[in-house]
Image (cartoon, rainbow, N blue to C red):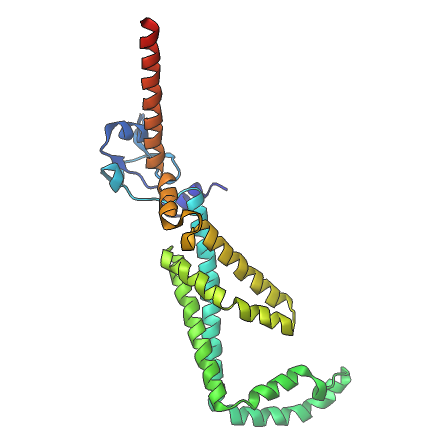
Length: 268
């Protein structure tokens, strides 16, 4: 997939006319339909007036290529964090509501178990030995203080997930750090949960979080990895179209100087 073309199909082209004449000539061409300027994202020539102009170092930094692919991955992670955060907030509300209505819910549950025994017997299912029923009874017997702590914990974790989602969606570096720290903090708990009971959902969630942490630290050069923030900014700048064209001009100039020197030496 050409991520740059995909980005332009969604957001439109981005054109810019730099003041530097040599660089300007590499981004501009005359056509029978009028002047055309190269898009800073996908490098396609677009017949239209440039959207901006000025010094090359003031041109907008447009994500392209690998940087655009990374941005798409980050926003997918952000969407997952948004979904998880909203689910945790809904659970927090459910526990809070249940805390106030626990007595009536417990009474209803105790009345429902005897009524359900005949139907369970048809399927040869012993409700008295069911671990699910036992866990529900344990929750119903929880103290008000315990339920309050659970509510606060779910609320805090849900808000943390939403903050991570906002930072990742906006492609902010602080969002990447929050995501790595917040996700890593709960990895030991997820591993402990697997020692109690292994399930596809638990294993899948653990793998997703491990991959997310490793990807963010490595690709975004967090915590000084692979040169840290300075190397990350240098890499992003190097991938911009204007930087590529400037480098091409520099290399072309050096080659021209070298050819001139060779020609002079040959004449002498």
